[in-house]
Image 1 (cartoon, rainbow, N blue to C red):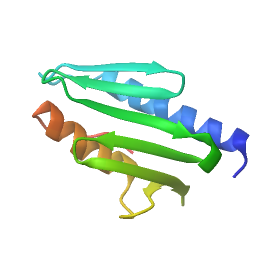
Image 2 (cartoon, rainbow, N blue to C red):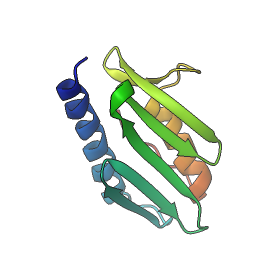
Image 3 (tube, rainbow, N blue to C red):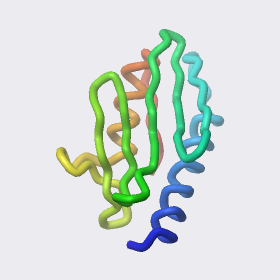
Image 4 (cartoon, one colour):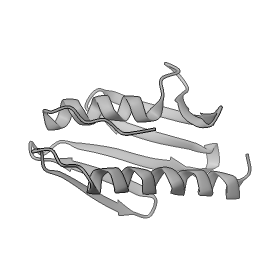
Length: 107
């Protein structure tokens, strides 16, 4: 993958996340702010989830209360380089844990 492809894929992912957060109808208050390729999700309890792109490695990084994860684009999805977990599934679990109610990002 070249830098242009990475940027397109990362932009698509960030847009997808923002759209799904904007359309969230649950009771939890989840604030989403994007600045310079870094997305910060802030929760009512003061906790945060940070999603950022690591251009030199062509990776998406995810920081949650549960830990930090690095994702590579493989087979049309972002896959964790340690657990082989899917980014959207792992993010859904983290958001659910931090907002206190079930949240699922659609693939």
